[in-house]
Length: 502
Image (cartoon, rainbow, N blue to C red; front, side, top):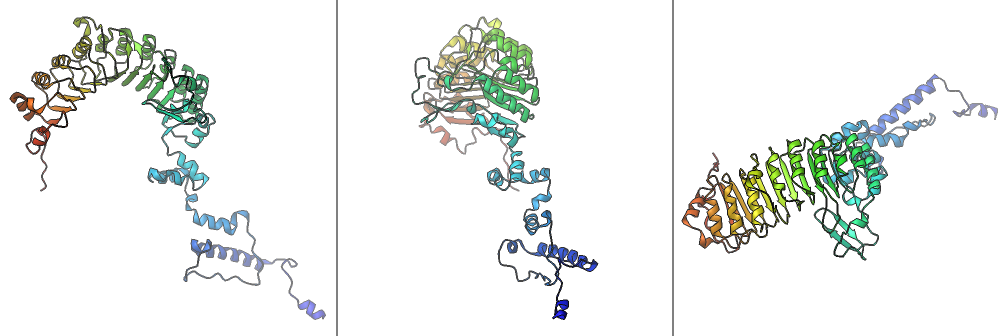
């Protein structure tokens, strides 16, 4: 019995490990790692192993191997399945940038690392929830944003609202018991965030997104805009709604601003005043402006003159629903490099423009665009065409009150190469012909939805002019057959190159 006890094997916990035991343990651990790396991923996940999968020979006698936390079998298999751990964030970000935008949402659900990295790919974002911005989650999730639209987020959505208002500037939900439906209704006044709240959000955005280039916001004050100007030196485009003269003090700090849209008073939504004082402050601060959009703004000769004197690089001016005082047209000639002038939704042009010797003209102007304007005031229309004598393109769309007498005033613009008339229901074929025959450089003609211009009234002189055009789009009404008859004749195709297959 004693001999049996002496011959009984000694367990590993009771005998001291020698050099051979240590060597066996090290060899076993390395062999197991090598074997696991050779096993397919489907085997590790519980799938059927391939016939060629090498078998793992586990010795029965040696002790059970011990692994540290970083060397467990689960961590080894995770490293094998997630090869992206070997890549740094910059390399992974570059790889994900080649994937289509439709996969961005699904890619963010892979893991937390992909969620953080994927957020750096977003450059443009429209905010609907202000709390998401003010809490800092926006800037932490999307640190590389360059274009941010905060307009809809600046409006408080009533709880349980069933009315949805869609405006060209803003889309909001309204309370069912709207008290604003009155003769002086302003639907958004009661639902706008306070200026202090908007300023706090702008500070958070400026600190988290220093590369911001475009910003659209509603109801901010000069304090919030100054913080954006100081933290975002690359800001180039700004769209500011419910703007007033005091807010323009903050805009003047944006020295690199190139594109600016100011929305003052919008009938039915909100009201604000931009006068000559604000336009002068703007002109002195933003001297690099290339495009300026004034919507619902007041002002006069002095404000436009200040912009022309200070913003010498200004190339495009858009005036929408203006509330300018009489005589403002005479200040346009101070904009010496102005190339495009757009008048949109203006109920009047200029009732008292002043004598012709004070009007001047915009010598560099190339395009005059009139859309949804009231053009029944012949004095204002005449002054407008007088200022725009050197224009090369005239576009008139859906303008009310433009008749033969008003359209004939365009004959003073002798350098016109393109004429586009759409929705001008009072202009006749006779007036069109009288103007076109005075333009010796006309090359492009587009007539659409002008019901008093008829095919049967086209004279031989006008037909000859059509033959010399490079482009002719003739759709004055649904009964016109001239466009169909011109197909294959080559009229309206002068100057085009014919490419033949060799």
